[in-house]
Image (cartoon, rainbow, N blue to C red; front, side):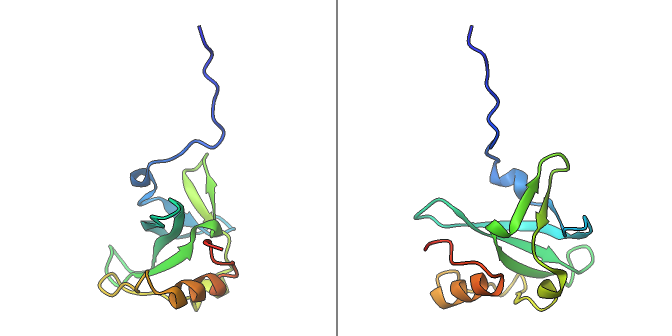
Length: 122
């Protein structure tokens, strides 16, 4: 009888990530993950689209944040965003009816630069 070995990096279904709470480094709630943007060429998660603000979904603003900006807290099933609150307050965002063009390389580079990361595809 073979023994089951626990995999330390257990993959998660995208549907289980959507709606997951996002907190800052002080465990204060920021919002939740609304969408994952996946690069079809590499299979990598490029961005988590996070909703901040608003009430019952009204007036909330969306932000595409490089996925490597998050740490997963398995014990609390939440993502900790490793970005200073001052940076988030001025971050480029969009509303649900006016998404940026994800195919625009300039936009992708600007988003990564804003959060202090090299583009994931390089």
